[in-house]
Length: 330
Ligand code: IPM
Ligand code: MN
Image 1 (cartoon, rainbow, N blue to C red):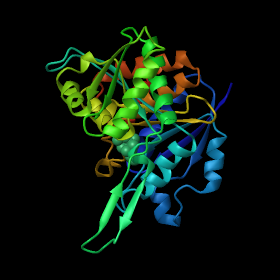
Image 2 (image 1 turned 180 degrees about the vertical axis):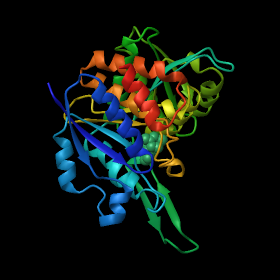
Image 3 (image 1 turned 30 degrees about the vertical axis):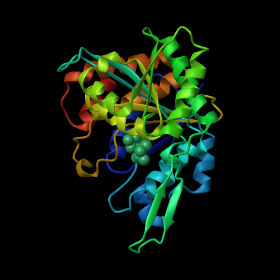
């Protein structure tokens, strides 16, 4: 079966790392048709379009999307992030943002092997809020967090299902229930309710600030974690930092119900400061492509890509030299 894969390089180092990811995909024997989209800040500066309806319609027809990174300094913060990336997450109902972290022992920890399940369509990202008296000394800005029982439950359930498949079968809920008493309570109750159906999964709860300490000092304690959108955003940059660097951190924005394509992207951003220098590590994008292969049922190819990335561990070259090395091992 030939997969139709949307390619969105985006901005900054995005196109560079995605080029290496497609190079690696080409080296596997997986049949796919790339459908290239010109989206991101550069396009926006050119013609004012962020995500034209025709592009969204075309994306809906695909089997998956591989995205590099979006956002450039010339465009105010949020325009591209909200208008393109978050719009895709909402429109395609990519309600799970799956971010695995694997790393060898280092410092005071004896190895990392954890997966963060980040809720990806609600919370602070829903964009609830607004201004009052904007621009005056009495200006007010509110920014809410939306948490639905439905949205929380489907994400928590996904995390339990994932934990069940893993050796340790352990799931930690991360939140801030001692301060965010409304949303935290909804998350906690939902977590406790769903846990009844998963007697085989051991559970724990950590406040997000405490989880930050454990991420640094003892990340090996974690197996699967589930958390809300904003905590998940912050925790997963830290997760990358403690497990081989953000240049290795891959992610999958999943529509687990498969009512449309899922989207795969490195956790890192567009890093405009190093764009065009060849300094970007393409491994996060390549590993995101491996997650895509797995989700498309191409398990064997996914394993080969991951093995090749592991072999490339000592290659210190430019973006394309690392991509070449990985493709060659495949
Ligand atoms: C991420 C990114 C995005 C987010 C940005 C680019 C909107 O940081 O995928 O983690 O905050 O979710
Ligand atoms: Mn982030």
